[in-house]
Amino acid sequence: METFVVLAQLTTEGSKSLDRDPHRLDLVNADLERMGAHVIQQYGVLGEYDIITFVEVKDNITAASIATEISSLGTAKLTTFPAIKFERFAELLNIQAYRTEPHTWQTQPWARALRWAARPWVMTRHVNRICRPLAVEGTEKLQDVRGPAIIIANHTSHIDTLALLAALPARLREKAAVAAAADRFYRMTMKSWWFSLFWNTYPVTRGGGKAALDYTMSLLKRDWSIIIYPEGGRFKPGRVQKFRHGPTIMAMEAKVPVIPVYLDGLYKLMPRGERAARPGRAAVRFGHPLSLADVTSVPDGTAHLERAVRELSIEPGAVESIAPQAAAG
Image (cartoon, rainbow, N blue to C red; front, side, top):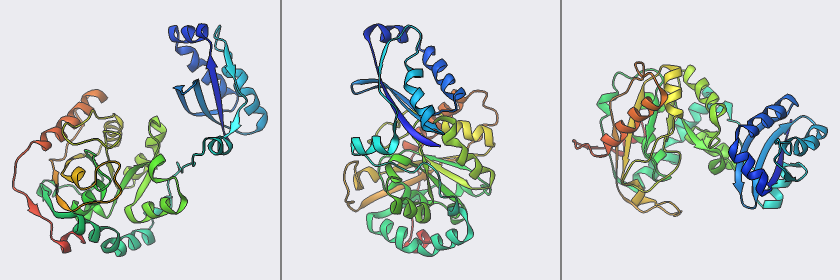
């Protein structure tokens, strides 16, 4: 299977027609699936193009018929362009393709052993240098968590994951994988290996829908915990942003607890857009594990999780500092 890109422009009449009945695009995509073309992603209003479609097909013959099929949106008239291979499309736009498949070897015993041995170098020394101090509150709430869990937190800085991993009790940290944006952390082959091996991250495509949750679900079924940022990106501190439904769907389907976490002060240490970190105080605050067993709808579950993290953002309490040797454990 190869990936192709199709660009299309709608006439004014065609655009209005599609606005009146957006379901037409779903019907066309269903036709593409019947032709053997798998629609990976589709966007509307991208620059001068109205529709951009990324599809996987088995051969050039199928690819050649994609543009024609997309142009058959009922009475909608489109200007279409021949399907081009994704690699060529990336070259024309001067962008770099990124990896979407996880490195499945990262959960193997040898990878776990190497990650443990390298932790003082790739994690602890950086946390101790930047977070002065790193304070942790609420680890006693996690005493009864032994199996897999979904760990959710607000997201303001690239240091968030380092601080959260350092703060987690060792029994959870040793079997915790981190969901990372594929287009951010998996653009370069060597870097993708580094993050997968030492941070135990795996790629998640933004807006990837259910397919993006499959590997996460397989990890949970194998007793791995997951660290994920439900806001879907990094945001300035202050108000916790609206959560996406992914963690809720996974928690309800896998029947695992959700651990809410609030990360405080890390934005000041490395604001978005800056490459160099500046030392300062930071805190990681854990909440009580939550069960979604009695939740009847995904939106209700998401609101419940979002509320738990918001409450941690204003919750006072005693804070203990992590000693360097504790963070390394």
